[in-house]
Length: 630
Image (cartoon, rainbow, N blue to C red):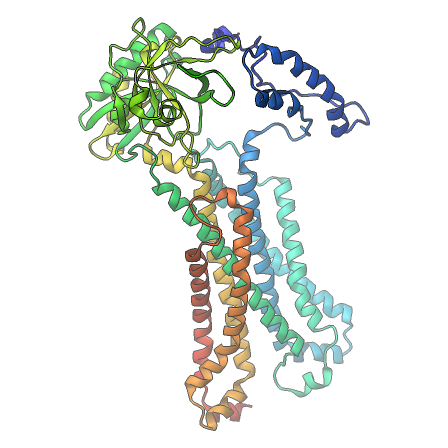
């Protein structure tokens, strides 16, 4: 079926060529055999097979032989979950997301535990009365666990109700697809339901343990004698520690969010080698509309002519290998004047383009000429290479002109150097925003043996989205059967190729905002309760002549020390996590001073805002009223 399914690959005879390694074998292990044993069993077979194929490569180096024979092995891996290349791509981002979610869950548990402990301190007299009236310890523990469980159940139910909307939004961001086209499921299935309920149950038990431990051994005499709840030193230490942990986790999440936001900003504003503004793009494949291969080139030419005639479009061009689309079309090339060795082989992109390609993308032409309509089938074969190829083989762009290159045949025979270099262009980011430019050879689309569908680019005078309707109408007038697919601006395409980084930055900022809110609530609760417990002390200080500003400093001093210690401990953790997930960063150091200082400043601002109202309340205490109340 290859001549019908993939006509362009039929001439290469890829199905019978031993140099092509592109199959994934699937095998079922015998009973009792482990993957490691199976891998050891196939190792001699694999080595002998590679040894028999080595002579097929006519010109090899010692380094190539070592890589091809000695360092090669057939890996046996578990296939129970299926083969999914995207799983490898999404593994690290999902680990980061789950880590941030886990930190947020920990903050929730600590926060609710702190608030329940504050409430428990206010209920000390009530619980002591229950003990005094004969309540058993198991009954008190059961009541507290039930209250915590109900609180967790209400929270989990609310979260599950909002989960479908949040999940659909997340998957749309992650996949950069239109609604309904995402390759992932947004449904809350049984596994997700049980996982969520399990997390809610565990978290509920964790934050319920704080009041349980507080009331396991109550001081009945003191609790019943005093008119208000008191707090033990252990509970006070726990509250201070809980607030410190929440501040530290907030700083950690803020620092992580800062690194991802800086990464996204660096990717979005870097130079890709061509101008992305005012550039519309869409794909057009005449073969999908029933055209034979021999008519495809003419249909593409007519489509470009129709697009160029639209008012507001300055130029239009096409390529078989679109830019910044995450795909690659590579081949091995040989260059005139250089022997074919492993070190000198050119493995790079092959793009078949139409005239005006570089002028439309505004990719600089450094030497030579662009393709013209005369570069078609039957005319001498020509090519334009990028600066990487020119420097690698000829030292400069000008020196590369006039030299010949040729494609390496799969059989290992000597290549035919039948293509003349007529131009050199600047390097561009092709695969994505992270991958550095590599060797690229551009060839005229009208000289391709088996014409295929293309990606069309249109340089506009106004905003690109204003001409989308006219482009569709012009292609429809040419032939209603032709399909304009994936119409978008190049800026949108850049956003799509950076969707993973955008998702991480967006969720990290969301998690950080929630973390700040949780830490602020916990800090406010602790300070408010502390001030309530110290009302008599504050009244005495004011009655003895203390200034209200000193009272505010007295309230804030202890919490400021806790916040400072938490921030100092969190900053090295940001650096460590940045190094752990350095593969997801771009253009920013893990110890970036700006990110670390911004995280510390935001945390300090949160502490100041959360403490402002309790401090103001402490300063507004009237001495006589406080003493009379006590």
